[in-house]
Image 1 (spheres, rainbow, N blue to C red):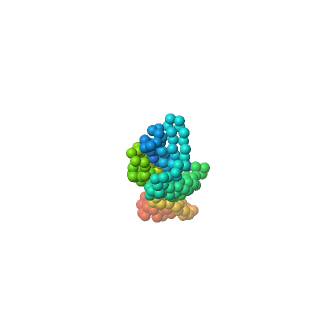
Image 2: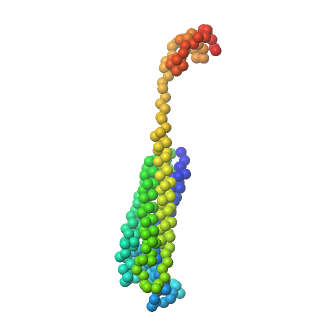
Image 3: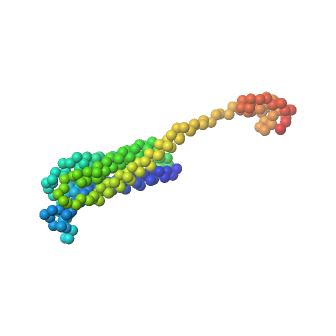
Length: 233
């Protein structure tokens, strides 16, 4: 049996979402702060959920591990992202392991129930990784920043959004395997019935008298033949 298309879509989208979400989690570029007062005009602060870096655009000198003098890392959206993003990554890895065991491309028949459960886990991980960038974007201008500076969204938020959407779509695709399980459950299983033995005087294709017929024909048709003996009609 070939692997269903929905499973293939899920197994392609979810690893891509994992890579994007992991990059968005680790990269310190959730927000960019530019035109900082009393600082060089080409200086940019890149703020993430774990680290804060400063970079000179003219010379591309980059220095990370900047001190958090404004209490940026103490705010609730940043703290929530620090907890939810790693939890989402762990769930995604768990879901991919279960999905690989359920899809079983190296076997003849996939395990639809196991693939469906993996889809639910991946769907949950995608929703978890979608909350932090959404919350962070909503509170972008409320987070501590130098006065009269310019704030823009960093690429880490965009990558987190894309990774979350891919995980949600991949999880939904794997969850469609529940349809196959329900279809199998509704389809009645037909068991072959043994053919009863016929008498020695029975002849296939001919009726010698009203009772000289096959036993299964006698009980299924519920009528007696009224044709003359030895009739082929």
